[in-house]
Image (cartoon, rainbow, N blue to C red):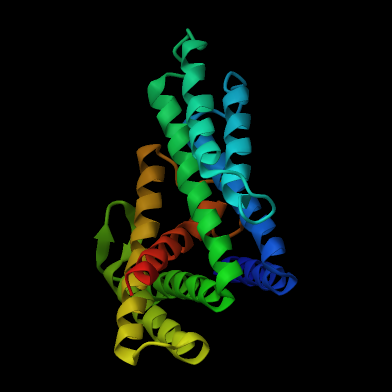
Length: 260
């Protein structure tokens, strides 16, 4: 737990510094997160020693860069941003006659690019529009995830799901409760604009999405028989083991803000 705590503090410090430096610096950090997440998802399916898909992998990186940083450092038409990656990642299937890259692989890589690209771009855009809501995303996700882990370690007795063997019902309840309390207090003080009941309800939905995000990304690991996405972050695993909940909370808040 000590190693996990230290890693969390370092990550939090990096996030705070990037936010202070401005949304463009924050955008570069999210680009790095997107690249690392793409690498983890790519290699969770394909062997790292394989060089047969290097061209496809590079196309994915370039596509991610344009999707994530569009409207931040440059402006490219959406038709180009979303159509070109489809063509660039699907067309190569006709050149891989050894079947190491077929339509299933193309759609897998394309899904990674759009999933991470849109998610990271969404977080950067929110930071440029309202930094307090961006902080709200990270606060809810990190508090929920951290206290779910602490609660499960201290009082967890009832197993929750086979998707995540270490997740317990008690941990989920503690994580959700602490996420709702801390998130609601922060929203009321820093953002406000709506009633306290609405704030609590929104935060509750987001804490649940935080837990769901963790389970969704865990299910991918289990499907490929992996414990962690990588060993990048001591005590956590890969970048996606830390940012899985952030992604789903950000997407959830975007939908909610569009509805109210």
